[in-house]
Structure formats: C-alpha cells, structure tokens
Length: 461
Image (cartoon, rainbow, N blue to C red; front, side, top):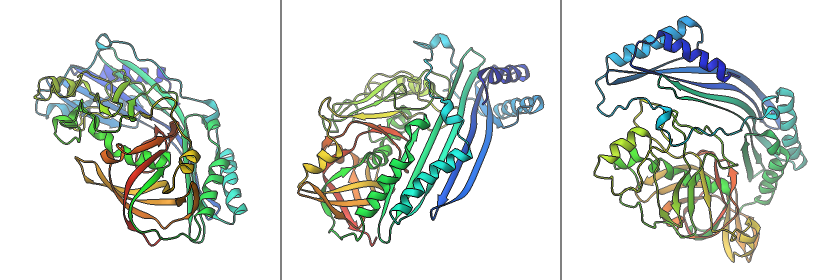
C-alpha cells in the first residue's frame, strides 16, 4: 500500500519540477482482487495493483490536469510538464479560485479509521472458501448460483503547494450472489470495510430462500399497490435524486430542487443527511480539492434544508440570482477534482425515520392486508427529471402479501413512480442499514412500506 510518506515524497518531486503559480497532486489507487463464480463453480480469479498520479497546475488564471501511473523521476517530470503545457493553451477562467489553504478551513480534516488488516490480508484461498460456502448453500437447495467475492485496499492522497496535506486509506470486502431456480431467482449483496462484518453463508441462505419461495410465480395485474421495498430497492431508487443536490445543478437549472429548497416536498417522516463520519459509511473525509467534508442535513422532516457545495460553486452562487433561494451557501467539502463541469454531490447518504418508530420487515408484512414485497430493482431510468419520475423493473424475488403473510412469488413488474410521490407515501421504515445495490452507490437506508406504488406492466418472467 502506498504510504503517506511515499505520497508526500512524490509531491516533493512534483514541486521540484513545477514552475506554475500553484500545483496539486492527487494519488489514488490500490490493490483489488476478485473471485467470480457461475454454474456453482469458480470461473475467474483476478488481482491487480495500480496507482494514478494526477497533477493539476494553476498558471496565470488557467488550470489543467495530467495523469500518469508511473512513479519514476522522469515520468513525474513529464506529467508536470504536460499539465503545464495544457494550462498554457487554455482560456483564462474568470471563476478559477486559488488552491485552498488549511487556514481557510473551519476545522482540520478529521481522519476516519476504515482500513482493516483482516480484509487486506485475504488471499485467493480465503476467497475460494467464501465462495465455497455460498455454492454449498446453492447445492443444498438444488439451485444454480453465480456471483463474486472481492476485496480491496485503496488510498487517496492530496497535496497542494499552499499546504493542504490529506491522506485516507480503507479496505473493502464485497459479496454478491444470485440463486437461480427453474422459474425463479433470489439475490443478495453486501459491502463492508471490514470483511468480518460480511457473512457469505447468510447472504446465500437468504438468496436461496427467495429463489425457492418465488417458484411458480403468479401473474398479478398492474396497478397501484402497497409495497414493502427492501433496503437495496430503496437505495437504487433514491440514488437518482442526489446528483440534483449540488449547487452547480441549481446554477445550471437542471435540479428538481430549483424553487423547492426550504419547502416540504416529502413526508414529515423523511430525514436525509450526508455524513461521511457515520459509523456505517465509507470514503475519505475530504473532497477533490482537499477540503474537509462536513456533515450536511439535506432534508429534515420532509423539508429540503441544505445543498452541498464545492469552493468554486459556493463562490459563484453567492453572486448569482439564486443566492437567497438555496439556504446557507458555503464550501461543504463535496467537490470533485478540478477541472470539471459537474461540481459536487453528496455521496455519504443516511436516510432515517422518526426516532423510536422503526418496524422490522416482518412487522411491515404482518400489518399489510394486500401488497407486494420487492427484493430489488434494476434497469432504472429517469422519465421526467423535475418530478423525479423513474421507470424500471422488479427482480430476483417479488412476492404477494395477503392478510399479513407472504403468500407466493409473482411475475415481475415494470413501474413508473415519482420519488417525490413515493417519499410522501411512506407508512413505515425499518432501522437504517448499510446497503448495496446495482444502480447507485452504497448508502445507509431503511426498508420502506409505501402505499400507492405504481406498477404499469407485468413481465413474462
């Protein structure tokens, strides 16, 4: 693993070769390994280690970036020269700010401990043993299984010539499994910084249970139903909202939050924060310029309270027509590396309901006279951006609920549903858990019981 001292030594060489007004180095990368399986057999083992050095220069009001994955002195000199040459041919950027200095930060970067030896030390034998546990469950239930078990250790380091010095390292273990029956399937996925939190056998048993219990699926006509969305389904739906939560999206007038900040647009039981320090979260506590990441309340009791900002977007927005319409405007440490046109977004989402009112999924099922239990969703696309109307399909475990019990599997549905409408119709939520999906980034979210969820079509599978 690339140490902080090694990354700092590389930055010293970058500075030695730079004649620009300001210079910044970002180093990211690490080691990743994956074991893939299908048809109840291991089919692939891959492992790689790679780091990217990315140099940005500010030069007479211009900025540019160049990258390399070579660490030798000559390669470092050439990447600095490339960034400088690119900057010289750019137009001056009137919105370009000087690189940040630590004196601008209200508080120093607070490190977070997310690197675990038990995860980084896992090798191919241990990955094969984990896969063996999952495949063993499949064979026990006469099912066919496919999936992955993967581990990684990564580093992000950022230094600039004004004194910012930021370093973060973390590990990650991932397991995903699909169990396939004759006319049904079940799926589970989990991701944790510490592999000891990951239980491949438990994931496999849950996926197998869904595949067995959804066999011989029944067709139910489309319409509006009460649904119980498991956390992975919630995550993949709400993930489509958060690109709209950056200040640049407001300036571009492409956010569904334009003219809605300070208003209650969701149910009063919905609270959303962006919190990189939450114990179930991952990621670095600084952004693409090395600015400390702040905990930002995005929605309180259904009302949109705050946005997130990079330094540049905050400065532009304070001088714009929107400055009195978006709540507090300040750099929150959510920017991406510069130069970019996308600005910023929150990536450490935590959604919670009212304290003391959480229900388990089993309790939600028991309280449902007629409804549908949804394991996961896929192939989700945006239909109408301002109402956040999405379409997509259920997958890998869709069940009919009648009289408080799961009765049988159902053929999958296509849905058309607005996130604003959905988050106004949440009747119950579970405790929030770390969850992984396929269409969005990991979040800490609850399962949700939602009334009047709109299914528009039944599939043939």
